[in-house]
Length: 445
Image 1 (cartoon, rainbow, N blue to C red):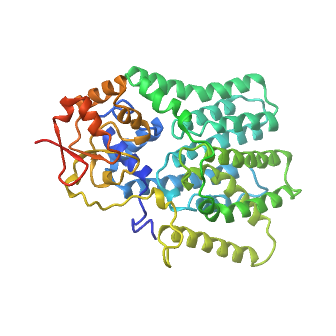
Image 2: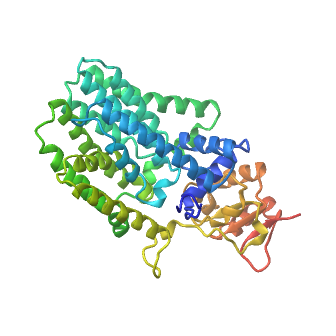
C-alpha cells in the first residue's frame, strides 16, 4: 500500500539519479557536464525514464516495480527451464518477488536493481552450459557479455566475473578457450563504453569518475548491522535451512546439484559486492535475491506437513511486511527508522530556490528536491577536490571553465568553499552576492 500511495522516503542517492536524468535531457553530456560516479548505463537509463515520464520519484518507482515484475518472471523461467528442482513450480518466482521487496529502498530504481537483471541472464547462461553438456562455448561468451553490461550499471558488479570463473572451473569441464571467451565477453562492453566516451571527448572524466572509482571506496566501512540483520536476517535463515533441505535430498541429479552449488557461490559473491559498494544501504544487497529466492523456495518445497508449510509462509510474509512498513514509518514512537541518514527532507525553508538552477556543496543534497541542478558539480564526492582546493591551479582552471559555460542561479554553500573561490577568481565572484542572512549566494540580476 505504501508504494501505491507514493509516500516512500526519498534517498539522497535517488535524488541524484533524478537529477542525472533531468540534466541528460537538457543536452548535458554525462561525466563532462554531469559530475557523478553513477554507472554510464544506469545514468542513460535514468535519462530515458525522464524523457518518457518526466522527473518524479513516483515515476522511477513505477518503472522499478515493472522491472521487478519482469525479473520475477525471468527467474521463474530460468529455474524451471533449466530443471534446477525436481518438479517445475512457481515458488522461485514468489520468493524472488519477496526477496527484492524486503526493504523499501530495494524498490527504488537503483543501479543494483538494474544490474541484477543481467545477473539473472548470466545465471541462465551458466545453467544452459551445464544442462547442454555439449562443450559449446556460446553460453560462456554470453555470460561474460551479460556480466560486462551489468558492470556498466553498478560498480561492484565485476566481482561476479570471479564467480563465473570459479563456477566454470569447479562445476564444468571448462576449456582454456572458454575462459578467454568469458573474459572477452566481459571486456567488450567496457571497451565499447570507453570508446564512446573517447569519441564524445569525455574519456578523462569517464576514467576519473567511473573507472577509478574503486580507489575512493572505503572498504569495510561501518555497517548498520542491526538494520541489515533485521531486514535480511529471517530470509537468510530460511535460505540456509533451504540449503540443508536441498542438499540432503537424494532425488537430484548431478547436474542439478551443480546448479545448486553455483547458487551458493553466487550468494557469497553477492555479499562481497555489497561490502565493496560505495554505500551500505540495503538496496546494494539486491544481487543476493536469486540466492535467497532459490533456497527459500527449496526449503518450502521439501517441507513436510499438511498445513504447516502454509502457516509458516503466512507468518514469514507477515513479518517481512511488518518490518518493511515499520522501516518506512514506525507505528509506535521513533522506533526503527530504516536508512534515516540517507533520507532527504522534501520541504525547504529556502523558498527562493524553488524551481531555480542551483549548486549545492556538501553531501547533503536535500535542496535539489524542489530545485534543478545548475552546474556539472552534481555529486559532492567527485566535485569536492576541485571546490575544496582553490589553491591548486588545475582546480581553478576547471572551476573557471565550468562557470563560463553554466552559472547556477543560487549556490547553497554548505561547506563554505566559495568565499575562497571568489577571492581567487574575482570575475566569477563579482557576479554573485550573498543571500541576506545566510551563507549562500545568488547570481546578480
